[in-house]
Image (cartoon, rainbow, N blue to C red):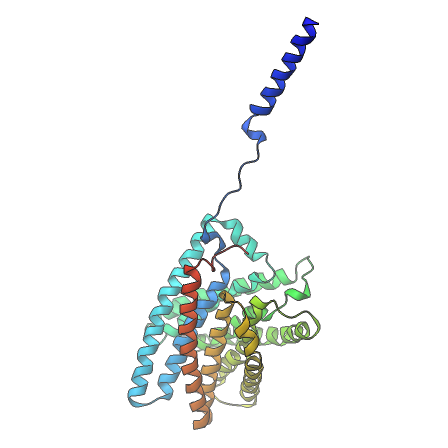
Amino acid sequence: MVHLVKLEQAMSQLQAVETFEKPAQFHTPPAREEGALAHMPVGLFGMVMGLAGTTLASQAAARALGGGLAVTAQWIALTAAGITLAVGSFIFLAYFIKLLRYPHAVVAEWHHHVRINFFPAASIALALVATMLLPHAPGVARVVWIIAAIGHAIGFVGVVSHWMGPRTIPVATLNPAWFIPAVGNVVMPIAGVDLGYLSVSWLFFGTGLMFWLVLLPMVIHRFVFEAPLPPKLVPTLAILIAPPAVAFIAYVKLTGGLDAGAQVLFGATIAFALLVVAAAGRIAKAPFGVPFWALSFPTAGLTIATLTYGAKAGIPGVTFAGLGLWAFLLVLIVVLLVRTLVAQAQGRICVPE
């Protein structure tokens, strides 16, 4: 009996050691807490696109106006350029730090069926900045444009390769953001022609135009036969305007006039703009977030396209409409900036989804 009691005591001590003195490697470590930077969305590069587009639209408005109003538009363009450079530098630097500190978060965005399409927005933003700087610093603009062109070519191939990879992409994930890589291609000629890269500009233009024509029926099919866009992505409907608008601007830059091709592209721009206006109620009801910046660049593209058409066709009414769009664009940008700052202050931008 004494030996039995001693055996039970020994077993109890052994269990106590196993329970309370288990080596650290057998315990699950607490989950690592990541800062807001890890959740910085790649879609913020669309903000730089919108600001740069506003600068270019203001430059176009200055050319269309005369007298003191032209000077005012030039000052607005310079102010917008300063904001673009400041915000753009911050976003590029912040995302680069994110890449260094949280590479797994960047990889996760790259493998996300929706977010991957926003990566080329970085190179598009650089191309727009190059176009913006061209009248003031052509040497700097050339360097920035070359970096943008190489970066976009790499990003474009990477994104399309992802689409064609050994996986099944749900049709419901298809949305207008898929146009972004195509839009980037047709942005390149806007500055590329003036920089002397005519053949390369035609290459980018042809690639972008063909992929837009391929993607357009796919996106329309998704709208008609699949579930509606999630409320957060409804503002991306405005991206429908960008491909024909930017293609029109680039085509006129490449050819120098309004031929049948330019007329078709401008007509398509107006048609898609009307469709987006028809969806304005749905867009207004969407919860505010980074996707709302999808309204900015297409509106800038529509403004520049309208001003360009008015100048080339010599129709004052079209030019007046373009100036009205420019005024609307300025109000839109101010509203987006204020709401973004408020949302960030409330901790609603760089957060996990």
